Amino acid sequence: MFKIIQKIWEWLRGETLKLLIFAGILLIIWGIIAPVGTLSWWLSAGTQALGLDINPTPDLIKNNNLAKTKDKNCYIIFLPGVGDFSANELTQGEETFLNQLVKLHPQCAIVDDVFPYSAANKSLGGQRFLAPVWRFASKEHGWLKNADVLIKIRNLWRFAISADNRYGSVYNLGIAKAIAERMNAASSINTASAQPIKIILIGTSGGAQVSLGAVEYLDKWLNTRLIVVSVGGSFDGETGFNRVEKVYHLRGSRDWVEDVTKIIFADRWSWMVNSPFIQAVRQGRYQVVETGSHTHDGINGYFSTEKIDNTGTTYVGLLLEKVNQLPIWDD
Image 1: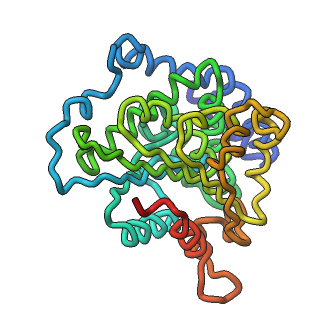
Image 2: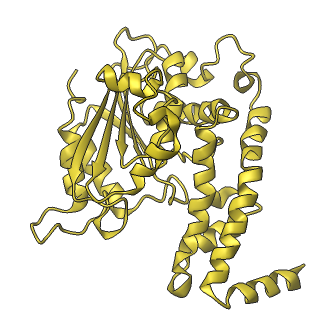
């Protein structure tokens, strides 16, 4: 077995093109088996995940009616893009963004440890069988520096599951459960309060789709005000739009990636007048905010720490300014 793996490795080292061909083959394979992990989690999670519990609210918040008055009533949930390896490996720019945001809004608790590409909230390094592959892809440099495309392909399939009518409800339930657990860990959720809990889900790239997917369950479980902030996000036109209070879609003038889902998801086409997305647009619950000259990622991306034309302002600083200007922070 080891010799076979060694031969495959030697073959892949021949040309970068071979790596891309291999990635294409994996793309097809993952497309076939991607729902398996979600269904396995579903079957192992008990009656709550199966929908057999009359009140499917996670136990940790269902019985938590004695929260202290000092506990917060606002949560910022950050769900990263498809290039991330795990929830606890944020880029320098993402960490800067969240650190500055919580300084500006200390009334809110930050939740940044939910991995949106696993229904069980497990990082890729925690998967026993493929963990070495993901670690290799996330850390390689030199001529293999583009091997992280494997992670992006893998996570893109989870994005697709979240938007899938067949498996999406199960996958999104798992993410919502993880969000509720990490919210409670960050600051005990006071379910006894008559005041709605403000939950601001900030999703970048595929994280925007997963944010919208979690909205339905969070709305069922908690008395909430649910707001989604999409940072160059990709999403369909159905998931979550009937439940969310407001969606702000932030986009850079040089970000062409976020345009792709406008084409591939029919519910976002302007003539689909009955789609949840179009209804949200007409009701003023969906708003586009231009952020400036951001690209989707890279040195000019939303979370880049590079300066803009030597002005002293960084790309992530400009994003922070735009997010801070949104009318979502005052009650």
